[in-house]
Picture 1 (cartoon, rainbow, N blue to C red):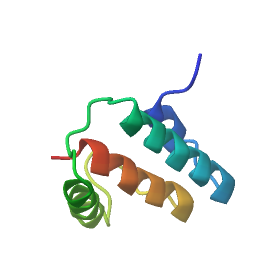
Picture 2 (picture 1 turned 45 degrees about the vertical axis):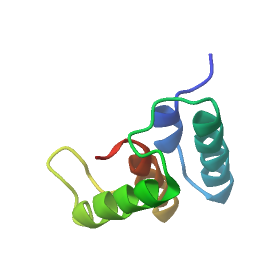
Picture 3 (picture 1 turned 180 degrees about the vertical axis):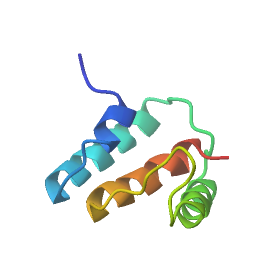
Picture 4 (picture 1 turned 90 degrees about the vertical axis):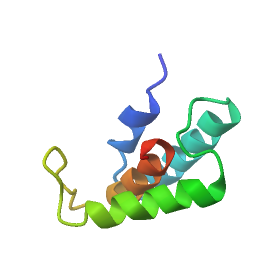
Length: 82
């Protein structure tokens, strides 16, 4: 069974796993999976908004020390954050 996008984002540890996540994110979009933000502008806006809001963590989110994972999480949230 293939890992979900959410599982992949939380496994990002380095450049290679970050690029694997980006490829999976691209395939997720191409497969017409449900995205809250359909345009690149809305996607990037949501990613920036969530990234800014979570800079110091959130009640149910602990900011990772790994910058590759943090970047992947910001991009993942661009898909789902409204």
